[in-house]
Length: 443
View 1 (tube, rainbow, N blue to C red):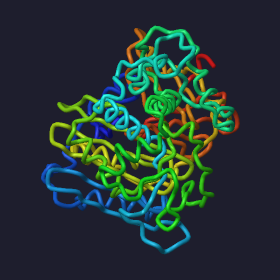
View 2: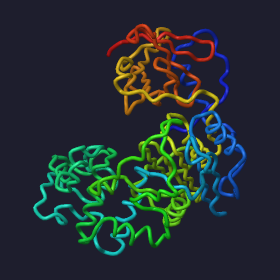
View 3: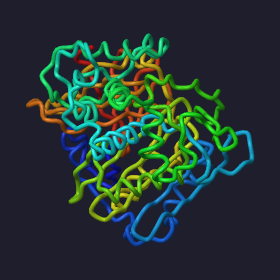
């Protein structure tokens, strides 16, 4: 699970302490008593969660937010904002969103239903489904579902443009010993969907409808959007065009549209059946949680649940914005985690080309422990990774762009500011009234 917010008020540190002590002090502020409620017993969305959602919308971070809490008491929604930034139609639990990679959870359930019916087994090999297939790793369906098939993360543009199953299956010509290390793969989930369709001599859409959508009564979940229900797409508060339709070859990895109400019903079934296939797992603070997110060109979605108390959360918004909105869902999963603040101006999303000048390894001039801080660029965001001289990770966290030269560390009040005139020069790490110098060691 993405890092929860562990914040509080650290004791003032005497002088300019070494970075190791600074980060340990921040990291030690693990969980504070932010919520005094038990989310398993709630019968409505708490007032502090509503307040956080209001701040996200009212302070210009996004047009609208919908949250749904699933617990043993029922399903509880709260929606705030409008379907379009320049409109007046209120968002609701019946508004439709592009759920992007949450589609993968539907694909995983199709696999589970196919196994239950005896159509396939988890260990069915792809060579048994596709005659003449060249698969140099003896891939099984389970390897695709749990992302251990040693396949690329993203589907190539040539495959998408040609909408070619044959082109998609070319990824299987790699040589690898399976199961490989977990590596998230849209390619693998797309192959899984195509393989399930092939094994039953059916279309994947038909399988999805018959085994998941219709049995669960998901009235507004489809690869074709309902334009009367569809929320507008935005980057921040700027409207975007509706994205192009997802090619059918990629249906296993993304492309579904759904509503908060439908997703809550889907999640209720996942909780009831204690499903974990296709989910990411997080173990922390005495419990296990499963989670998955989806982000497309103008919508963001997130789902999570805890098996121990049967609490689940769906969170949807009609924009692509770079902030900590997801922490609202994490707070409902564990109320000890702090709710996000949206008092700051909306963060910017920079290109990898813009971030290239900042990528490298840095040393803190005041750090006698010789910890290293490595900044890498990933999908338009800098990633902060601090290690001890022995290679032990002290902290790994995204950095949010305040502007083109200043970045904030997620979850803690630390800013890294680069010289605007010469971004390759030293940077300052700012914590409260302390300003510590970062010196570039390597590019």
